[in-house]
Length: 158
Image 1 (cartoon, rainbow, N blue to C red):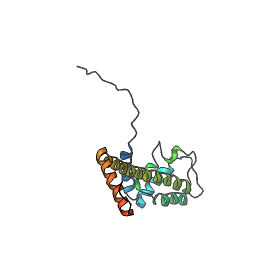
Image 2 (cartoon, rainbow, N blue to C red; image 1 turned 180 degrees about the vertical axis):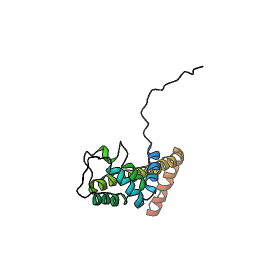
Image 3 (cartoon, rainbow, N blue to C red; image 1 turned 90 degrees about the vertical axis):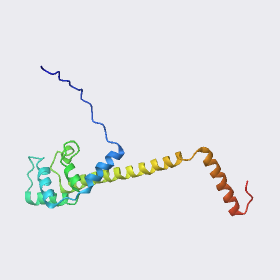
């Protein structure tokens, strides 16, 4: 008996929430890049421009490798990704500066996402703290604070 194949309509992937992206960013920034990894990824990166013919290929690839070595492994892997990598935005082989600029931009993105998650967590904690007190409790505490301030100034409490 043949089973009916059910085909689902394609749907775009859902963007990550701030907290999910921050978690992913922490993982991306966690591991350092070894010289071997930088060399392997540098070779793959330069291979994305097959017609590149630098005058000194060895110096060119060493420069790109040295630049990649400065960044976390997750950033070095991202530079090769088809949708967001360096080749997605450049028609010509990259210089060391182009590689550095791209990596700095991604590094800033990931650090920004981690910071946004921290701010969101702080904000959520503040909202939760506000929700913990009833309006009646807030009113009485405000009255007590006013009386205390008036007492410290030597004025009679209202």
